[in-house]
Image (cartoon, rainbow, N blue to C red; front, side, top):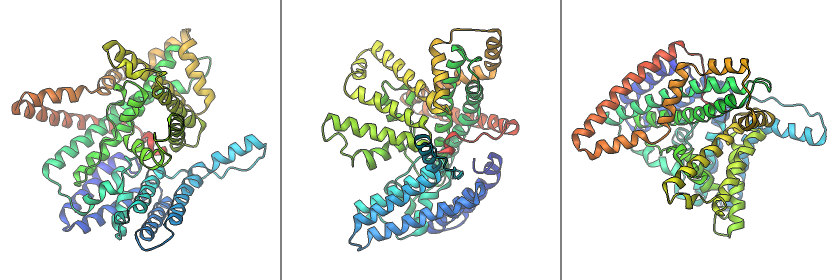
Length: 475
């Protein structure tokens, strides 16, 4: 985290929460949250706080221009988009561009070595969506700088999303109510997310990191599959855990954000997978890139091209490495093949065996994609993937390493991860609600008791664990 977990839990959050409920008036509350958000971000890297503020100032200025009487609105929009994308290119992709120019031309241009500002991809996309929305409708613009600052920098979702659109959150910034029930449900959601991160994602990450650090002579099929599955579980519980924490904290302050994950590992097909994975990013690209490119309105060939462009952009958005590009294009290719019925996932959904086959196909595709996503280089990705299907050896050293990695806590965490990655809890919640008021109250009571126990486990974990930041802090 930008703050250490202990400082956030026991100093920063209680101080902000207490002050928030003591001061009167929505404008004052919003200003408090905006200032607290800037302090939260500045704690990690004060210098890059200026970049965040510069992004807010520029997008605020362009919003004022576009919502006013300026005649050359298209030129103003183009300038705003170029400026926002320019921020990303300089601070996230400059060295990547230089490396590829050197590789193609043989030049020895020196790398700049700019450190990546935390969360730049998220707050840049929020600022850019605001400007585009104001271009489309002047009434969406805001003359309140503090309101826009809070929208872009709100600390629960500042550094790793979900990506929020201004038109979705603006009414809540003007008027909202925070009840005791909202606070209780928000805290429970926050604790669930914290537990996902500390107890599952970090446990899976330890094994995944160990496997991906192995050399060619140490790797085999068992270890490669273990590492690939562990990272697939790690990134889901790491990122969905952060989203749970952001949604929980938002609700504590009276703000409701849309869900960012809906059990993507229960999907049948890559298209279904993206309906449940990083929903806010998918929605952003659909609204601001896919539809403006023509969406599915210009024939099958153009639709396929538009999808590939979107998935290419999705890949490069995640980081300045060809591994991310390949990951994005892999998902784009499979999505296009499903659209063309070459991979007949829609047909598979008609029977139990078909849905089972579709689920196996989806998870295999997702796991292979995440191997490439996790790898530092394409050669490392190939080492893991090739051993997944050909590494049928088991030397004494490999056997010892396998046993070391599969310790009891790891096996317990993996079992929990498998269960929680599927919609098991919603199933029991639905059963409880159908059983009447008594069943509903019992389920809610049990969930709060389990939440309290989970919080204790998280505290015990924090007291002994080392710092392990969220994966999406890198993006």
